[in-house]
Length: 286
Length: 312
Image (tube, rainbow over all chains, first blue to last red; front, top):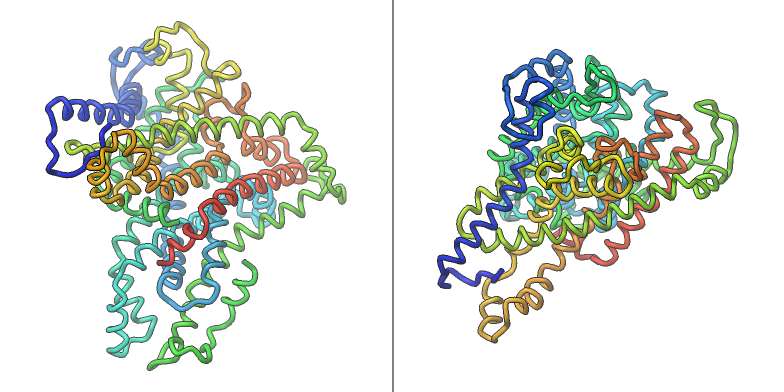
């Protein structure tokens, strides 16, 4: 595990091989379970599904048909709506706050950042009993609002940390020259800085979306049933029941998992640079 | 928090004095704009994060039979919780889960990060692949590992020739399976954070350490680790706080059976399955104090660096 020290260093063939093998190990770690998932989801019939052999057939798409017979498209719709609304709200509210924190004169900035940090340390379960009572009284159980409102406030700290980093990286001169040209502070933000921060905002948006899409605790408490109303994808996947009670329908579940995972993996691959930049900005700075 | 929200939620009056806050042309001054900009975020966080915590403290002092309010209970719910074996069991599981999963994730994540930092071929692919476990919903990871550990189809048992070993149906091993699934899902994420830290260490430092005759191990111990310390602490902070909240994995893999009931699962039980808002709120308040306390210890260790980082 020698530290690389520079491009001048000579590397032996054995070292290159060794490192490639190690990288292969990382790839195996990350991707193999997913391969297992896909293979299992394509198996048909009890004999194939209960076989540990990955290549035990017969194969087919029956499991996928079964998934959508169970209203899974409605779960997808709910998750899209909830995660989408969370993303929109978080980006708007978060970028305003982040800009103020990164650039504008604000008293007690440290106190404010400390407050944001402590919200990011909150255990969501602390909100479950009080919010459940509040939502019950307000009629927000089993609604999209009942989910995306708490998601937004939970994801705001991360959004603010990520965006503060991105806003702070934009050269100050740009705003100053805008102001010399007679722009108000708001115009400087809206016309000059916000468009320049678009890559950062986009990175933040993806991360927010993924987190809201994956959330399970609040979703399973506030909207545990009824795909027609607000049950989200993770709740549905956790709740799939088979024909035989107490036996989880492995085919349907794995097929549903693949349906959800493939678009997310494609998204992660396309935007990997942005996501990595956003994640590290949010954590290393936050 | 309250002080700030008072200060910042005042109507956008132009701030007196300060030269940067003066009006130029039309529109809000910078000071006023700053206040207007932070107000929605503060309000939202206060309303849905701060208010419920206060409300939970109030609820935890009330006596309920199912959902019917019976009167004021004082600290009875807390006394009940502290004398409840189930509470201590879930506390122990949560701590064991946190310590073991974070420790393994850190070691494996650091290994991955060191490898990726010096790899010259296949780095792009690896970095993309490392995002896959991160992007997969935890519930899906939980279902996946449930089936892999389960007796049927028995994939893991077959690979390791273990026959019909019942991982998920006995104390100890069930917890192991849950920790394993978490380590699988989160190590790559830790690697990503540490890799970002590694890439800020200038290569010349290693060069001069090498010239001075430092061995591979010395370079790692005396150069890499000290310089990586901030990134390590931040990664540990976020992982520890997240691990203490664990819910999805044990809930889906074991339903909290066989000694895998986490604090979050326990609290959730008293909200929906066996509703008792008072007792549930007492448990959630205890969890809140615990998690925030551990978080604060980390923040103290990191010092101002953590918060200041966002400003500069």
